[in-house]
Image 1: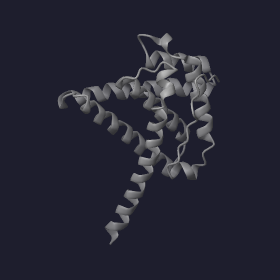
Image 2: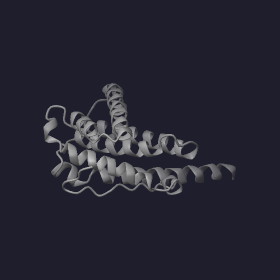
Image 3: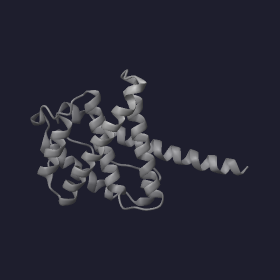
Length: 183
């Protein structure tokens, strides 16, 4: 009987994480990012888009304690589990996966620091430059910096409007990107 209480809570938490993570992935897959704003429609480009949305979610939950801190950690775990799964689907052999995961984790946390700093300072130019440099390092001019930065700043503001209780229930709302969006 007591184990069923723990299992129920675990199942509820799983549903919350699944719902919130699905919102992040759905937002990251919006065709506008790829067709209009220059995000490469490649495995790495999709990783960057999902990572960008994950960073925006973590920006919203930073500094929150208790259940929100646990949700943030569970979401990070889900993100990296998804990345691991994707790497394996691409045919990377088991011995190489940990090394690639370390590299992708370093990339993610480096981006998070740069994006958060620009968001904190309200610096759309720095944010756009960081996004372009990270998403398309060989062709940063292919990225619509103004639209990406404007979207991220708008998304950060919109996520702030989601009440904590809704966020903890798995509600994550991102704005709809439009063909051209500036801050």
